Length: 277
Ligand code: BGC
Image 1 (cartoon, rainbow, N blue to C red):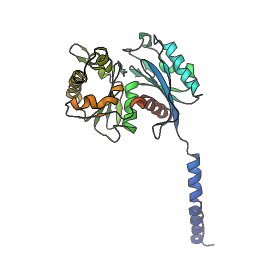
Image 2 (cartoon, protein in one colour):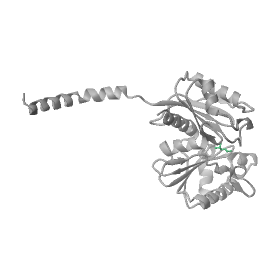
Image 3 (cartoon, rainbow, N blue to C red):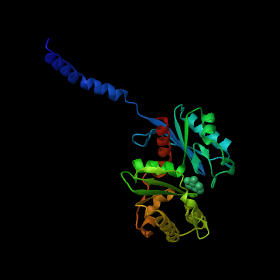
Image 4 (tube, rainbow, N blue to C red):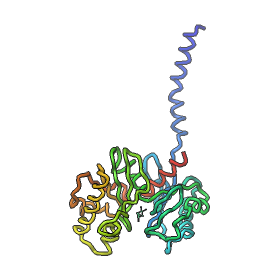
């Protein structure tokens, strides 16, 4: 047989087999799933996440945050969530503080005993799973940039979460600059989060107009420092965006977060998947 003829036979066989090869590839394609757990001031919630779509693969499971929120008790609650899902794979966990290499470095709204705690080691010991720990706002930002309001946005994007405190995450051309902690910028002699968090709005019974004035002043300060192209407003208040977004007057575009309550879980799961690769 001539070599030209052999080549032709090989080509025909390969083309005929392509659908089979493609089918096997599809069937064997592993959907990357990790468990995301979001530690908040009042609740700790988790769900498995399909990190390719950002969809939760089961209903969220929520337990109250132990009070006081000491490391041992919080870690036990986290382990209860992994047991609920019978989870033995990578887990991503958010924490409302500066987290570097799994170690918690600050504690503005959690028990002071966390400062210096190796959260990753503690959670791994309690859950028996490989763990990634990430700042809560950074996790929410990652989720919004991938699946939500920040999708496709380049330039400087700043995500803000308004809750008990103010969390911030900063992205330049899609790359996260972690642990920015801009909720602790000083404004009128106080931490900005003490003036403009959602907790302050509720505690002081501020009208939406009064609270929006404070938020606008805070955003003006952030604009002065960073000139962002886009602000994404997250946290519980993003559900009521129509009450205050029209009252803000900034040069940058301002949009509400799209993923609402799930952003922390999804971002944590993505961080874990990234670490696992
Ligand atoms: C903490 C941040 C956290 C934010 C939102 C602040 O008090 O210092 O680390 O991201 O609250 O929870």
